[in-house]
Image (tube, rainbow, N blue to C red; front, side, top):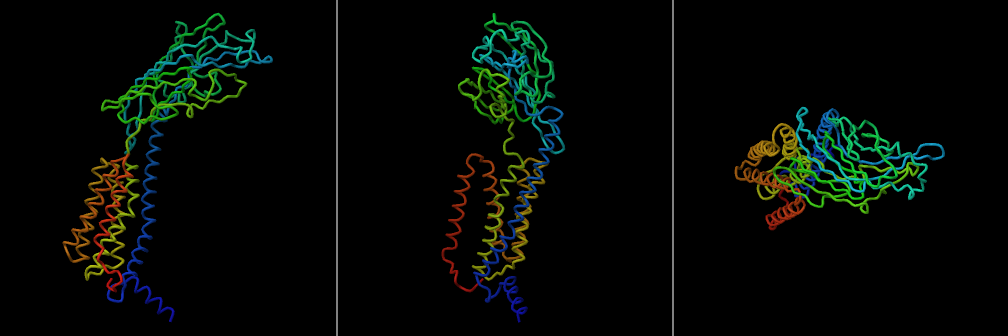
Length: 438
């Protein structure tokens, strides 16, 4: 008896047609099918993440040979002093640090992926005031002036393409690999002349530096001024400080930063024994070579609307059942749902080889055509089938418009969903949901 009852129950779910099937039962079946499609939409998003991870791997492989993200930290003056018979260092930042950069960019291809790279001509100039050892509690007779050095931090030395020349008090010298500053793990350094009789140390240095994705600077000066220009047309300014002014055009961008010692959270001078670690990536600022909403970001964002699209298409089919004599089997709902899910895999596949807009058109036309023709077979009515295809086309167009509006996505999306809900409520306002018709 139990087996017979179970058989009848499953039959009613899978075959809710005829007068014995209720609207409520069909709604439960559709809700259950929507629940089943949730994992499929999550799998699409996981596929996007997997492909994006492969893109990140490709970017890492290219940057590993070219140069990674760079942050210029310095220059910092390091002067040793006698501390109980051992040499310890005192560190001093510039009074004025001025940085001028001209950055040329290019895209390198790794497989099907594009990786943004840059080569920067960076000029540093400014001056140090006479080091104030007294404020650090160090007597002048303990200072080893003759062992003074200048260090500039560069995290990825593979990006240095030419020897770095330092001009110090009007004399030039070549800088060598390494630093004397505990916060700077990698970089270049040079011995310099220093003494208590010198009150002002003028300096300049030029770097030819390669890198990828990001170029930043650590504001070590009492006043730090940075001017950067580039041919990259979509910069994303990042870090602890934003430009005081910038211009972005079709030819690239220009930006100016100005940072005072009062704006930052580390001192102008300190001792090695203070164990002060200045993290350049936390205190620095600069620019990312941002690629505006790329293929994977757009596909991921579009996939977030997948369950809403499936729900609305199912709703159209359900309304056809309620308002006509046509009956649609749950398996037919399932096939329509899978067609709508396949749209996102088609989109992702094509977008890796052609422009996202073209890929979106190809995937949309393919799925809309398939759903429209299948709707004709199910509903036996071209008008209803074309209406269903038109609604699906509108949904895909609406989502595409949302993808292009990075700043207004939430507003436009909310208004659009409100309008769709209002339209559904209007169309269904006269339906008697209690009648036993579905």
